[in-house]
Image (tube, rainbow, N blue to C red):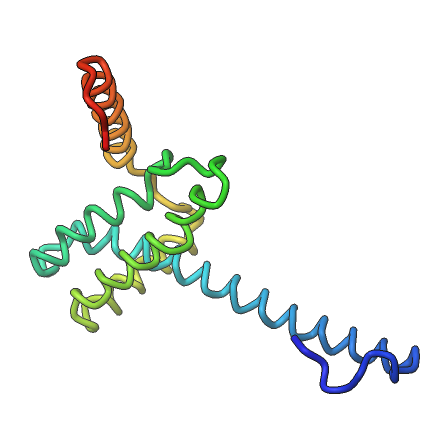
Length: 159
């Protein structure tokens, strides 16, 4: 955020006002991010209900099963301890997948699933866990490791 006036011309009292205004802007931004995260959590649970519902269109269900399996898996595809890349899945990939599924499910059905999700979360049930999603990620990592081992073991280059 750039100030409209030179910093040298501010008196100490004016500095406090600028700091106070900046603090208010940061608090507002943080509250928006928290609200976005709550909606994202609710939508993941709503998609979990959509996967189980027969009224969900076939393609939406396919993408929703993949998204929910990944979102509710206790294991990340890209582990969070890897700098920058570890959070890409949580910050970009997952919201993008959720956005796609939300476009594939009719709005009236999504409203029903969201109300079920809000009731589920209000009941203190928390976020469900997908063991199948965790198993799929473990299988993917193992398949990648085997492929690398076979490729490097036979003297083949990746490039």
